[in-house]
Each structure stands twice: as structure tokens, then as C-alpha cells.
View 1 (spheres, one colour):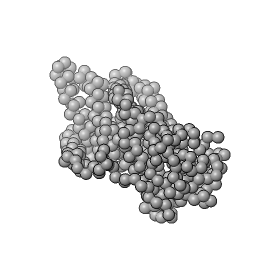
View 2 (cartoon, rainbow, N blue to C red):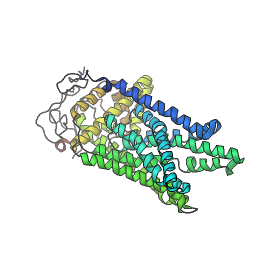
View 3 (cartoon, rainbow, N blue to C red):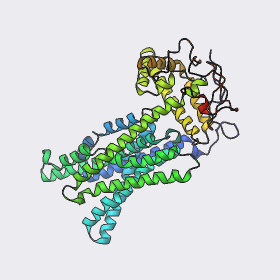
View 4 (cartoon, one colour):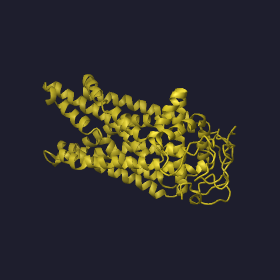
Length: 472
């Protein structure tokens, strides 16, 4: 019977003791409580402000129409995050921040700035134009970027690359657009009530068509540029502090510029809006969509390339890197586990896939010299999580490999049965004892006996390319 890896299962401090003592303001429940209180109060205030401007009936109509694109947008960003899905609490926080805190900041700051400009220039129409094209993009994109910054700083383990930045930014902007659409649609409904217009010629119908049908992706598209900046910064090493600061700022400036062009499109003539939409917004949306999907495929390739090192060390079975590097094979594995063991087994397999993906990304950063200070601790934690879910995950992944034929052509994979889980196969895998654990320096120690992996061994060893199992 395989033994448990002999390393601590809880984070320890520099002296080796568990981190039990902390100031009261550093406790998790205090931070969560303060954040929840802030978002709740922001939500109540923004609710009162929007209802005051739209009226109760307009608010309800705006709410019913504004909620329509939200499930589709959130589902799209969640789909992008399927390779290494982040926790739902990050998405809930992001949406709540965008819908409550960021929207409140925007309404208050935009109104104050527009009134101040109108008073200073004595030209209300010019103040409205300047507020929409200059003030609003700066205020709104900064307010939304605050959510990305908070996740980047305080949930760093969940923020490891471009896709994470895109998802957090997109969900935050979706929440912001939701509240803004309630305001615009509710106000349009109130206008129609005063003028008696209804049907497709009404202001409500026109607003709905422009904001919900034509451009539901507008706010997410702007803020995603900020998220990409944070995502690239997350890929940078801790020593590249200047790069980690400048890239998010550059992304924020690009988001402000695109937002300003979109808001100012009405000043380009009668068809200025449609010209900007067709010539700029749609191509930009297509380009960013391609970039995110390409990044997602690159993440799957990283999983296939990095995890074989842990196969050699005995932590993973031979076919697992292939199954974990294929979204179809992952889905088949979860379905198989659900049929055999129910919802709990399927959840364990999904968690195994997520932890294995995080492990692959962690090693990839380590090999490129971008590892954070807690590299070794994080690696141990991830291996520990995999070890405790192997009972459900390995049979499911074995089935997925057999069904989907996820291994590359010419590899000669023939299943695990003849060798057992974690055991070496004759070819092309090298014998155990010649290669093993990969440290953050890109080197390996001696591997464990088949089926009985041990904790990391930090001894002299050959660099990674010397034992790449795919090299011929």
C-alpha cells in the first residue's frame, strides 16, 4: 500500500512553526467581514441612487432587461477559466465589486466632475461631452481595476497568468455594466412614460438594442485590457518589480483610451457610433477573443509538457499528463467518476485536475526562473492534494486516456494495467532513480520507488532536458 508523502500539510513560518498567531486585523474573518460590509453598504447606496433616478417602476424594468446578458457573459468567462478554474468566491467578489463599489464610485465621481465643469465653464453641453469622453473612462476603468488589483495582491495563488486576469476583469466589468444598464434602461423607460412612446420606436427599445444586443461586451472588452496587463505581470518574476508595476498601468491606460473612443463615437457624426463599432470595437473584440483562446491552448500544452516530470518521480501515472492536457479527456474522466462514484467522486476528479494544472504552471514558472519565494511550499501542498484524491482520479483518467486516445502519436501508450499506477513503463520512460523531483531551479533529485513517492529530495542532479521522456 502506498504511503503518505512525509512532508508537512500546513504552511509553516520561517522558524518551522505553524502560523497561528496574527494580529486581529490580519485574521481572515476580519478581512472578509470588512469587505462584505463595504460591498453591502455600497450595494444599498447604489440601489437607492438608481431607484431615485429611475423611479420604482423604471428600476424594475431596467433590472429585468439588464440581467439578460449577465448569465451569458459570466458563463463565457467561466468557460475560458476551465483549464485552471479559480474559486467561485473570486468571481462573486469581482461581480459584486463591479456592480456595487465601482458603480457607486463612478456615479458619484462622474456627477461631481460634470457639475464642476459645467459651473466652471458655464456650458452644460460641453461639460456633458467632456465628462463622457474624458472623466468617465478614467474614473470607471480605475474603479474596476481596483478589483483586479485586490485579487492580484490578496489572492495571488489564484492569479497566475493572462487568463486569470481576463476572467477577473471581465466578470468585474460585467457587474459594472449590469448596474449601469439598470440606470440607462430605467431612465429610458421613464422618458417613454412621459412622452407616451412604446414599441420598437421607444427610447427603451433603442437603448436595449445598443447596450444589450449590440455591445454587451463593451465594458468587459475595455477592462480586459487591464486584466491582461495584470496577467502578464503575474507571469513575471518577483525581481522584475518595474515590469510588474508598468504593465498593469499600461493596460489601464489602453482600457481608458478604448473607453474614451467608444464614448466619444457620437461626436464623430451621425454614423460615428456605427463606424467606431464596425471598424474598431468588433475587430478588437475578435483579436482579444483569439488571444485568450490561444492562451488557453498554450496552457493545455504546458500541462502536457511539465507534468511528465512528476510521472518519472512516481507522483502521477504515465497517461495522466495526456489526459490532463485535453479538455475532452478531462470531461470524460469527470463523467466516468460520476457514473461510478456519484457527485463526490466527480468533484474529487475535478479538484485533482485543477491541482495538477496548478502544479504544471508552478513548475513552468520555476523552470523559467519566475518562481515566487513559496515555490517549494506550494509544490508540497499541491502534491499533497493530488495524493489524497488519487483513488478516484487515476481510474477515471485512465479511462479517459483509453477513450479519447489523448496520448501523442507514436508514444506507444498501452494503459497502466501491466505496470500499476505510478510505475515506470519500459519505453520511452527512463528508469526510476535517474530522475525525479524538480526544484525551483529547474533541477531534479532522485526519484522515489514506483508507487511510493516521497517528499522532495534536493540533491545534485541533471537539468530537466536530460530526462525529458518525450525526447527521442
